[in-house]
Length: 324
Image 1: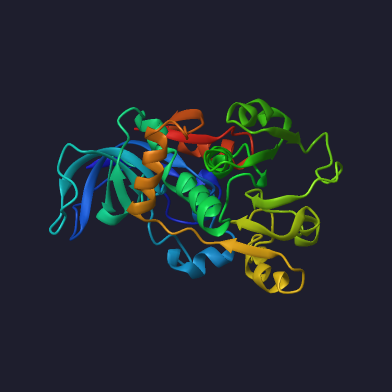
Image 2: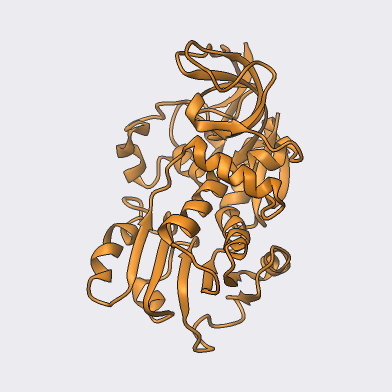
């Protein structure tokens, strides 16, 4: 048996319970991980509430959660390996993505896991798999960033944004980060060349335009963002927040490619892909010191509901993590 954060129905953080449940066994191509830490990302809130309803159509359960244990980012130690696993052995320290990381043990697919950088704590490693890889794919792949470009990052003080600032700098860009007052010092410490506090300064007020905009905040109109781009510039929309119950803001990603046909600029909606290759690429950048996970608060497993509330209220500076 093991302890885990479980829910039987969709709802607020009040539906989460710490329970004793059976420990899983690794199937073909899976590793069993003794969880040391688990990241809390915005996706956890969406899967907990079942909102927007679009999430349920993606296979996570129409009427109740298909996987009752929450959490998708994990860092820990390999306890056992299933048939066919060749990249890991018991005792290896790893990080990656899975289903159900808010637990003492979890099974993960071998191709969704990589070796943990030795100098990172488990908490730092657990903050990285989804947020870090999403930022990497936004900056490197969708954004196709090049040296010297002027980059604007909306939501720079959040989980994805805090990685994106550092990655854009590592790729040689000039970075402006946009965030709220309480996150200004964090974004500056991450290496941003300029920081805009959107509660005090109108983003478009200075008349600056950018080669690349990464929108990890998810609520500004495309027409507004278009005015901040140079001609043939690129906007990458990372997820969606603040919309209605049906699509929850994801409609911007859906319509972005169509809108870009009319304005001479590239609008892209990012759907991140979880692969061990990008985990390894991210690990290399972290080992080189180019990127460091920004961990704001660490909660014990039993306080997972409080951790999710804290994140969803927008107070987190960087990442929130559970320790197990």
